[in-house]
Length: 364
Image (tube, rainbow, N blue to C red):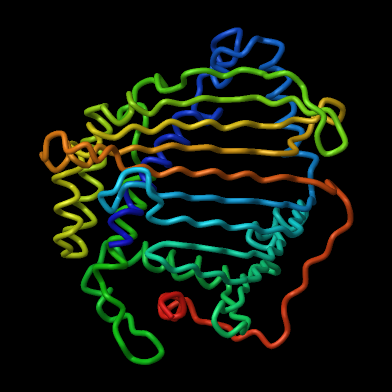
């Protein structure tokens, strides 16, 4: 069931990111198209700041906050069915020299996180530490506190092997885990098929124009984090995208491919219902970038998303007065101590996992 929800969300985010990404725009207009209705001066300031951040920033401390609230999904309007609150902080380091040799080794990061969730009358809270250093990711098991590790190089190698075997389905069944249990061919083929479909998709055919961009504006400067910051606010209304027959057909194709490969009737049913669900769903977003007036570096990013689904209309129940089911998401990331000296070290006594054992570890 989790996969049924994640695949449409991943596709939506992929299309949105591809459609509004600066690299996807032709540089023809005097005002860069990725800036939409920003003035030429504001656009130049923002593009310069983003380029400078990408080129000059090699380390920073990040603090992030994620809030997710689900309302009305249990048939009761204006009630919180589920809430998730995640906070974390830690250093992030980029080594440009290593990037030329092995991009996976160019990044080091550490996050101390606390997650709290509530729903169904229960409230759960857990701590987790995450580190990434020398092409290896480490995390603590929330239940035991034990450090677990996984090599990114090994994961990439396994993915490359899976991609090579995708054209040879009969070989997939011969791959075995250390315990001797065969890896399910459908799972591997599903991931490969979806990745290939998305990688080769012409987004311009799925959504010809970024008509869902409502407004892009530079707001008044504010004093924050000990400096003057310029907020650039981008408002998006996804209604044109959700109603687009091209996007609906694309999503149906992705869900159908996944359902057939995994022999999953739930995904196949989701493919059939996708157009109806999208016709009765609204999604609005705001993304705000906070740029330093003095150093022209990115210091903060916030995202707010509101999703509403008219469940009554989707199920053909008419007007029951229950109201839409909603999902509200707020996320913000703050960057400070930019380009100051930081270090991230691997934890001692971590239990290293083989890529084939990752699924079992995550399901515990």
